[in-house]
Length: 248
Image 1 (cartoon, rainbow, N blue to C red):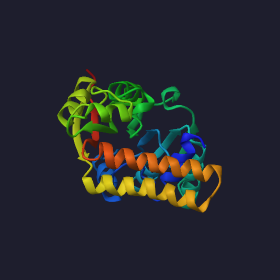
Image 2: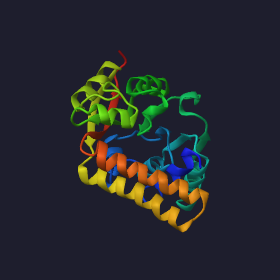
Image 3: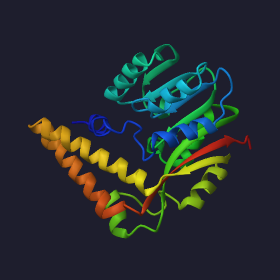
Image 4: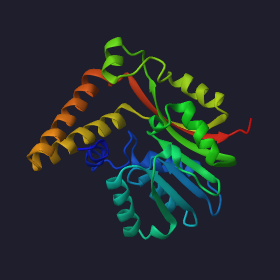
């Protein structure tokens, strides 16, 4: 089973695909205060939950979603049709770092997908290419709530500089040419809901589908749960920043 399929299955009961509740997702999108006829782009859109909600909140907006996951994009297209939003949403199955558009956007999202560009600074540089002057970015990124142990870094295949602490994350955004105009720091309850959903949904699918795929999914769920409970819980945080391009 390829990584995108496992992720698609694991997010079945939590399609937001980040440790954020629906209420806080709405709050972040509302704070963007998008203009009439806004253009919105999501780099790493997954099943399109953020974009679809943005289109519901802004009835004259249009959106583009970019992802490499075939199953996730099919789910996004199905949801758009069911919600009557298909005419305002375009989906692109290409790597996020290779997407090109003819016109700039009022809001560019990259929530939980900064790895596609190599980190936060690289993501913000890429986002900048798609934003109109004064446009907004909504970027979700991990941060260290407390210094990680060497054992955890080895487990994650990470290094201490991959993330900063919360203050350092805001500084990294500032240094990349953005002013922070709002933000949401995911709570422990949001993290737990996300992780229990990810591991539990994938486990249930695995038990309902015995065989090689089920065995692989069950192993992936167990490995993820162990890494969370015995590793990064209360060490790795998640913040979603609403950033204004500052045209340095």
